[in-house]
Length: 463
Image 1 (cartoon, one colour):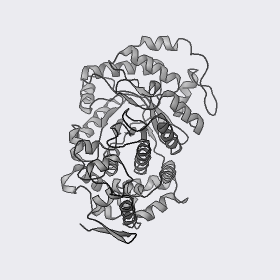
Image 2 (cartoon, rainbow, N blue to C red):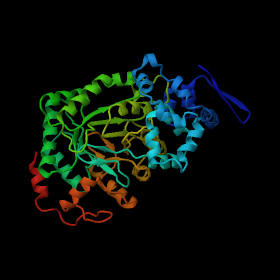
Image 3 (cartoon, rainbow, N blue to C red):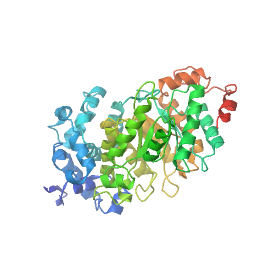
Image 4 (cartoon, rainbow, N blue to C red):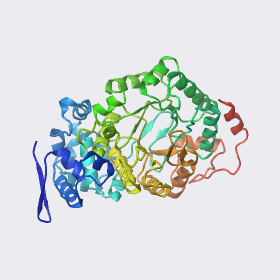
């Protein structure tokens, strides 16, 4: 494989292959330092970025960071590449591609048409030479619309996952959190629970309870229990009312193996969910979560930087036409994203790359308690992602997930973003909120001042 070189301030820097070039060009983050792949200083980083900017996009079709024969994700990327979609940008370098993406001549329709021709490595490469405002501007032009019981990803809409986790899976506690979230207009992306006790009978119990709530009130949303994909398949086999199939995914075959999955089992899960035919508006039945650092934490990164690994996970997601994808951006901890600045940058990178690849991307705007970050940093990232057209964020009571023990965004935070940025929930869910007298009928819906009659009493009885 060829070397890449670039001189800065009279010093010539050499990068032995595309993997090293990509890693050295990445904005600073603690995970790449931990992996031993980060640039040694800012000057080396600039040299790598300039060399990367001169690289033709076609290079990424011939030089893979993980060899084709060694990794099923690499094979998926190459085998699914759409040469016709790639044709309009095939002559560009990475730097030219950045300029093309930012140009006024490139609109949402153009970006949608080229998405099947963009590989994850191309998306990651161009993100490494973009400022935060570039990532926001281009992502805002990308519209990715999906459907199950409502329509997600439309312009001027921001959806939320209502996350009513409970440390003992107590159904009354879960119901109370659902009520709280619904009364703040949360839950149109999904009502999704991480079970504290992760086994098939518990999955069946929780998903049945969620289905009872959704059916009783006719809520135009979908439910999901975030268990291992094999548990969901077994729950479907037992007749459980499963809407969405969840799985955490990563950007290498080895990392996915550490999760106990491969492409075959994900395909089986999607087929099982489709067989239930529970969607009323569409058949996007998969929900994936990702996050920078997951491959490194499994020692399955193959010497890649964590952001390039993350982008490769989006090729896995794209294969299965998901309703929802989100990066749990600060969840793994400061070993991978040290502080608020690194978390903000990673969130914008992940959202941009996924949207460029045609994914319905959201973000869990979050951090762990031992990171050098606080809720003000999350306010900044939430606002920037709202401006960037993020499909959905999380809604959790008081921003504090008492089961997973991390800090994220609250029902109030999502309401703030909608009000400040003039955004609304999914249209079907918005109409339901008005019908239930939770929201007023205004351009930017406001909460009603009184609790809807009997709503809380009846919901809390459904457990």
